[in-house]
Amino acid sequence: MLEIAIKNILEETTGLDVTPVFGVGEPPFITYTVIPIGGGTIKESQVEIKIIDIDFDNALQIREKILKKLDIEYKDPSLVNHNIVLRSGLAGGGSLFNDSIQMWEVSCIFIIKWRSK
Image 1 (cartoon, rainbow, N blue to C red):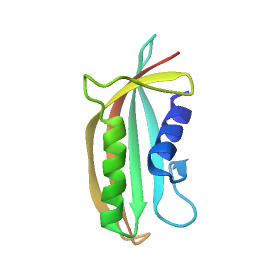
Image 2 (cartoon, one colour):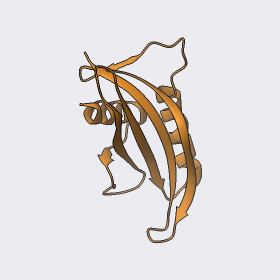
Image 3 (tube, one colour):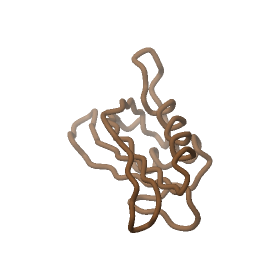
C-alpha cells in the first residue's frame, strides 16, 4: 500500500524513524497522514508530512531533503517502492510553533498519483 511506500521513502531519504500521525521518542519526528482522493487503476491521494523538532533550522533542512525526493519534476522518473509506482508534487505546507509540545511543526502536503506495480 501507499502508506508503506511513503514510510520507506521518507526513512531512506532522511535516515530518521517515520510514524503515522504522531512521533515518539527523541525529536526530530517525521509523521505522515494519507487521505485517499480518487480511486481506479491510477489512484490519487493527499499526503501530509510533518517534521516536528525543537530546532527550526534543522526541521527546514529535513524538509528540503523531502522536497528534493517527493516534489518530482516532469522529466524525472517515477518513484518505485514496495510494488508501488508513484509521482508526486508539492501542493502546500507551512510552519508553526506548537505551544503544547514546545516544538516546531513544518508540514508539506503532496498530491500523489500512484498505482500497484
